[in-house]
Length: 250
Picture 1 (cartoon, rainbow, N blue to C red):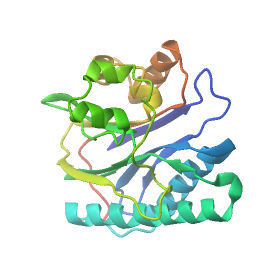
Picture 2 (spheres, rainbow, N blue to C red; picture 1 turned 180 degrees about the vertical axis):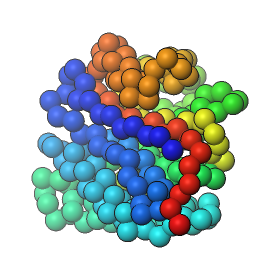
Picture 3 (cartoon, rainbow, N blue to C red; picture 1 turned 45 degrees about the vertical axis):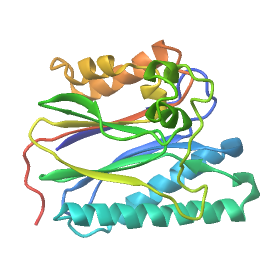
Picture 4 (cartoon, helix red, strand yellow; picture 1 turned 90 degrees about the vertical axis):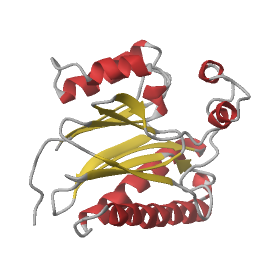
């Protein structure tokens, strides 16, 4: 398993409210996370930072994941716990009122990957069948597309594109989408905030991730470079995980 994480403030924002990382438990299993914070002055980075720190600690203490059911249960319980932490923090600190964050995270084992998402940070899969988006955005425009009220092309430039229907930490409880996929040799996951997916087309993403001449670090840097070339109005954050045969700890 190879993995890389990268984040960039972009060209316009004063602060980077995105956060994330790739963390390993004692059994060599990886958890990749991207979180895009929002709310009040500097509160977005509080929400995304709290998310990453709490999940990092929980993951590093976790027992070995053997089955997809265990992975899904761990994500459900852990993300719900983090939701409560952020929600309570916002109630106790007026400067953080209304803060929240998106999250997309993936547990990667040598048999499968289990992905959770809330909001509009995304996970894409590159495998032998091609490049596709695994997650569904919890956003107003995506609901309009799904219900046939606007086209996917209209959604790209919709004035309310940034309106989320779900976020982590803004309510006492939160719904999340969790799915498990088979993860095989040479498959790759790309997790990213909307600072990347709003700027770089799926076709470009696919060509970069498939470029055999670039290392994984170079691919990550190229994604950030492109998003900044196209305006860089938002923070840009991504993680790439590539399956390679390995033996997990006992």
